[in-house]
Amino acid sequence: MGIAASTRNRWWQTALMGLALSYCFPPTAGWAQRAVDLQIGQWETSGPNLRLYSAAYGRQFLGPLGYGFRGTALIDPDSTDRSLYALSPELRLRASGRVAPYAVGGVGLALQPASTVEFAALWYAGVGLAWNPASWLGVGLELSYLVEDSGFRGFWDIGAGDREGWAGSVRFAFSWGGGSRSSGGGSVNVPPPSSSGPSEPMDLPAAPAEPLSSEGTALAYDIVDTAIGVMGEPYRWGGTSTEQGFDCSGLIYFAYGEHDLSIPRVSRDQARAGRSVPRDVGSLAPGDILLFANGGSGVNHVGLYVGNRRFIHATTSGGVKVSELETSDSYNRWWYQRWVGARRILD
Image (cartoon, rainbow, N blue to C red):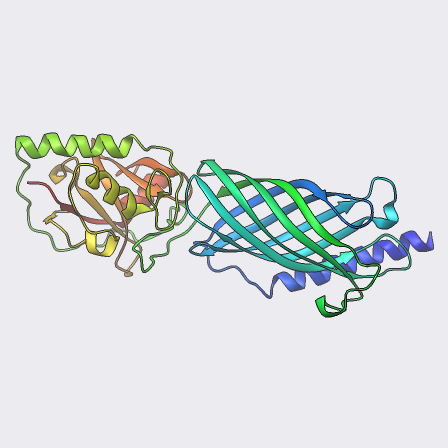
């Protein structure tokens, strides 16, 4: 009973210290994309190999850089005394694309059930390759190196009894959410819908635009069809292709570029391209670039008008999707309230 109680106390201490460490790496405001992932594999050590299981919650908070908090169990099926349990803050770096490399590393507090060891540290660093078949799902193969450090001696003084070695594993990641954040590249993570917000959208000065010619109308529908053809592609910061995924301005840049039309790459420049179109649904034509602004922050999101009050855009919460300029539900009303104008590229 004494050993069991002592072990429970260590677990509580480990959990509390791990949570305290996680707040040393606070996630940023609500615009960060969230994810959970599950990992299973095997740790090859100088002694008996251990089975690796882990679960993590994290946020993408600065382009490809992310923060996570991971729980890891390294299980020796033949001896619980040799098993290891850890809670770890970690950093992640991932590239854009449907198939994308990534790197991960961290250090956490670890506990062995053996009564002779109270705490240890678990250091790990790894690289992997992830396949992202949807904006919310990723599957990765990972190779990582793990080091057990009993007594927190550090890499400079690993004891003879400490274990280290390579681990191979599979990761399953599930992503959702996001918030507004304009970047130097002009991409944006769009906030979750809310019924709150300005009662009236902010207006931008706009003179009436000339209607499209028959040739321009035909080309506009071709551009819209190109954008619709990549529906469901994942959101990727800085992405401009089906191999990378898309951010909001990257989708429009791609759709026009596929028809040999050169437009600015980033949203702040797309907001000045072509001719102004009034903020009036009846004045819009397919192929117009819709401009959105969150409060007084200026244009920080763009979409491509497809007709019938609908527009296609890239969002962190759903990848490339179609939304509407409507007020009948909270999601579309959120967009309508932040729609500030449009630009017409075609003649």
